[in-house]
Length: 140
Ligand SMILES: [Zn+2]
Image 1: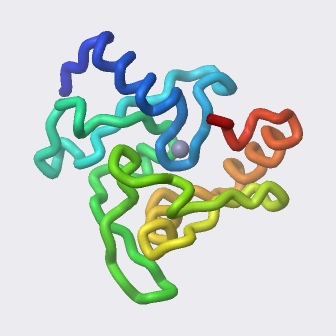
Image 2: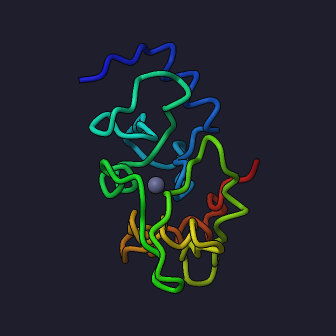
Image 3: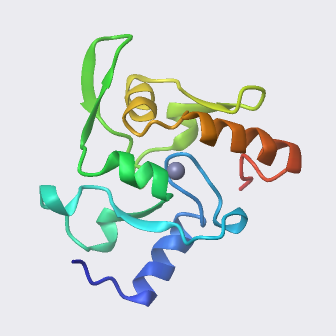
């Protein structure tokens, strides 16, 4: 098991703007703590170093598990998953506020949406409610 200090957890959460690095679920609207995720899973040799840590919701984190790559069906390519520490969300994804879906704009974005199952029925339904409430997508 990893030993991540509270101090480091706070630092990572702040850098990640208190939201899931993948689906952007904001900490402020959910009752459970967002998880500290290993961008490269510990099972694949990822460390507890700050540079390998980000914030993720339980859904994205559990679907990501130890995956490093995903598959993009439209180009038939296996590609590295989105790295929220090194890549910019808006360059790879967009949000459809009418359907509640997160859409991959690039090969990486599409493979990540698929691998992390970011548009499961319950998540999409919740996002539509958050949009109505003015809680989502989070503003910088
Ligand atoms: Zn998420």
